[in-house]
View 1 (cartoon, rainbow, N blue to C red):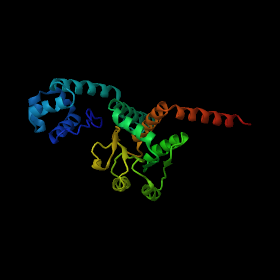
View 2: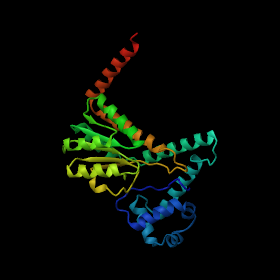
View 3: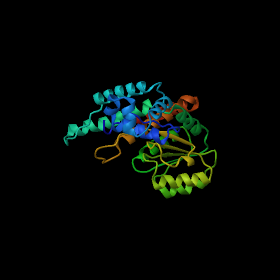
View 4: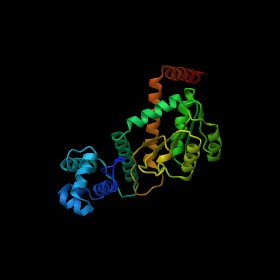
Length: 278
């Protein structure tokens, strides 16, 4: 399937052999579907027992169940995800639509309910929240900050990196830092993580990078899915998915606190009254 991944499993128990099997399934999907476990093991340079353990460890009762899942998902993706190689307007419309549909479907199917619940509760309990992201991730930062300010949450959100750094020493252990980053590995993100770790401030990273390498600094990590673009002129699908998380988190906060809901209702009335003023 090329760019479309069949398996994206975030399981800390997966070994190097398991990661090799995942890569093989994603890159040699047809071979995996059409051959027995012995041939696949030889091609992967792992044992048949390793493949069976991998299947059991990741929710499949048998190798055959895993193979059937791969077959069905591969057929579904071929039917629903088709990228164009042309340069006409319709090609661009098709490809941008495909990127976003893929990202939304894969993210929702693999959504981490527990991690999202933790973030919602952390936001509701924090005295102050710092939100930061660079590039297209700033869009999600600004949207989350604006939404939380509507319900009276104390927010620090500035596009200038130096300003954000100066804010961190004023935070405490019962505050929160929320970072948006597709790669999770930018210099700015790493610097904030290190400083926050020293100040014992909990950090949530929202990223598409399963293994960003900075997990030891994190209080919480929430993953989203994206599709590697043929020609990357902008971060297409990551923008949509980050905004999806912003809407989910804010909606849950409103649902959990009737006072917040009343703030929004009353605020909407004020805006409506202003708009009707002649």
